[in-house]
Length: 140
Image 1 (cartoon, rainbow, N blue to C red):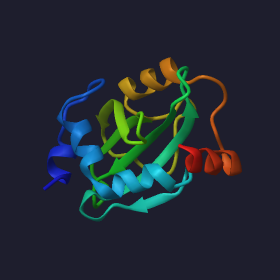
Image 2: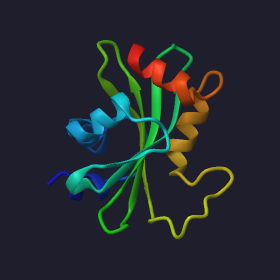
Image 3: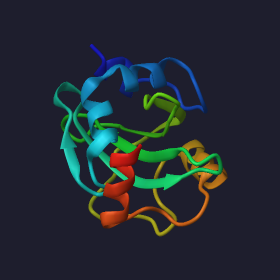
């Protein structure tokens, strides 16, 4: 039920139905709350998810860029979500793209253009990786 509308959604910026569907899914919220970057997660009917990047924005909020690939390697959805007051995730940008082919990735990233632009606009400082990322997730 969620997979069809989510992965069939339109590309765009903040808000909109795809963002609401993203965060209404408990598995996606759990992935954003705890999964380290680069670790693929089974999201049941949605397919597979992966956090790509974790960082703090200019306001100090924890933000995570992530992807969801439809079951069977279908279309890929990209999103950027930042922790709002109270700890809930808020989608800042969302986009779709064709399924990646092979293991090769572009040097500049292969996420939807709107999501890449939102990350570039919001990131403040270096990305959080390894133990630093895990510590920030606990503090979220």
